[in-house]
Length: 160
Image 1 (spheres, rainbow, N blue to C red):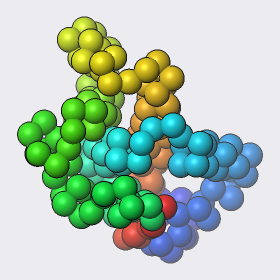
Image 2: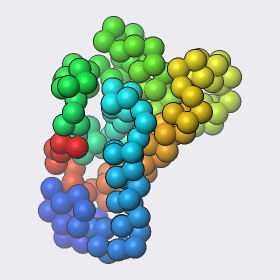
Image 3: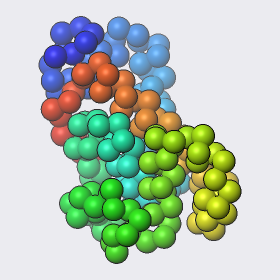
């Protein structure tokens, strides 16, 4: 049951009406991450799912991008996200994005200070793409934690 309001388990947006201006701003940010992002879909999705696992967010873990099959994303892609270091279905760029996202959610200061990681990261991402990745992770981490803490929509499956 939601910790704010009396929203049904599959209502992901109703609670935002309690804060209409901030809710609209979150909507604009979400739209930018999903429709104006310069990251390849597989890179974006592995990063999103690494955050979802770290957040224990059922909504995020159950969400799938409608363009996934055309980008070579199937359920195996999602099933192995915690094996990002070794699963052969991910390439080096995807592994780096997963590592960034997971550490962004679980050890942000360690990530900041890891010069070896940054050397590897810059082999795969320009500053512009790294900015897109970081801002995307900020949306997923923050929104996922809000949904989880307020117990909103935790039984919902989405196609993005």
